[in-house]
Image (cartoon, rainbow, N blue to C red):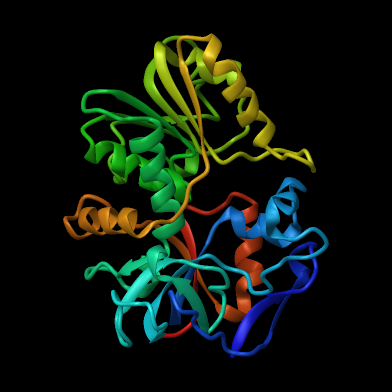
Length: 325
């Protein structure tokens, strides 16, 4: 089968489009015939092996343990392991797995769910990692409640577009932060207010928020705290930085160390894709309360270009790779 393969850490040129053996589903796994796969910044981090903390955490010290890139997946079940009872061949599914940039991929049964009936495979592939991250950030870490004032930084990105919609569906008053060219998009997905960060400073002290989700990862904790109410909650979703060892993770660690000594709640998020959360997202999607925002689609052979564009932060919503029509 065709796949995007990597045997060494490095720039996106380290990725190769080549033939590899088709995977075999384990006892608790399904084999998915991939129709589409989403692209997110995590794919770039695993490609480069940066920050080095990723390697220490088990992704491979000298080279990636998993050769095929990709996490988000949408497709049809081709075969099931002997312990799988929830799925059968032919089922349309979506979720997360290792190696979705390929014609076939193995997925754990607890990390996939039936595909939303009103989405195409391309749209469904844009949901799992980013949608679950936004859901867990708001519900589990932020404890969002109706009537709260919620600020979403990076509102036009993969996680941000879901966060705006999920916060709105929770009954919050939502303000999105983005660049000038993306303000119309953020308004169109339900934001009550939009702050163009190239023109206005959301942390000028004039406005305070009960809950801030920072999905952009490049603002100081002191600045973010200025925009919080005295007992507000800050949730850092991932983190981007220039340090080769920790990247933006050091800011998250500082937040966790500071939180016990201040009235504000400073939280981090290390999201996981779970079937139960996918099912919650499916309900909202099928009810018309949440919809994936797609930027561009690429062919599997164009995966390097897709990853490069996402790494530059240019995407509006999610970028998706189409594997099969």
